[in-house]
Amino acid sequence: MPARLNKKSTLAQLGEFGFIEWIKKNTTVSGSVIKGIGDDAAVIALTEKKRILLTTDMLLEDVHFTLKMPIGKIGYKAIAVNISDIAAMGGVPKYILVSLGVPARTRARWIFDLYQAMHQTALKFGTCLVGGDTIRSDKTIINIAMMGESQKDKIIFRSGARPQDKIFVTGKLGNSFKSGRHLSFTPRVKESQYLVKYFKPTAMIDVSDGLLGDLGHILQESHVSAILNENKIPRQPSATLENALYDGEDFELLFTLSALDSQRLRKIKTPFSFYPIGEIIKGTGQIFLRNEKGVLRNYCPKSYTHF
Ligand SMILES: [Mg+2]
Image (cartoon, rainbow, N blue to C red):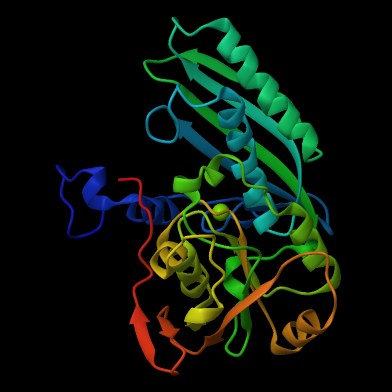
């Protein structure tokens, strides 16, 4: 337990990231674990060259969705957020376990429709549902665990960004909740596969907590800082700069490329949108925003936290 906490301390005081730090310090992993906690997915060595990726995500009624939302969209989102995490590692999503907590009064039709939506979404992205668990609970909980795969040399961690690398994002940011896009976004699997096939991204993450928050994770894991060009950050219609910087759940990929790879990407025609938004500099996790006049402001990489 960290020094500033005592026996009566709550999770709210510890914080989500404090809790994750505690788990990291108090657990050990076996030799085949390449990456445990601290990235978009865990990475396990299956053979000399083959890697398995594991990720999981939980959605809770009235926190992440309400029963009034269209059931198809809830099912879609539950699967798509996990696919996005596999894409953020440069991996190919493969198999899905679905665990549900539901009140006994839940209509069977609702569950069937939820499964149909998840099944269709899984198929759409080349994956399939292979098992899970169902329990009774006071509120509806949907937990998805996903397995993906990758070749050893194609995996992209958060920790590889180096000074002079350029920073890119795969799409426009901001207003995801207001516009309802958080329920219908396309996880960037194709973009990710294109990048790992033709380039060598040095770090990658999906934007779930907000641009500054998720860039903060890359900077922290890579031990570097960053400058973002304010007017280069692509924004969704009617999104302000603040929306683009802080809103969560855009599920675009945020990645870094060496200066050489970056030049190559900007020169060739690609079937996708890759927006250059800044560069990595030496430092300790700070983010600076450069306006049109070249003035730099120091920004705080705050992001959504669950407690
Ligand atoms: Mg992620």
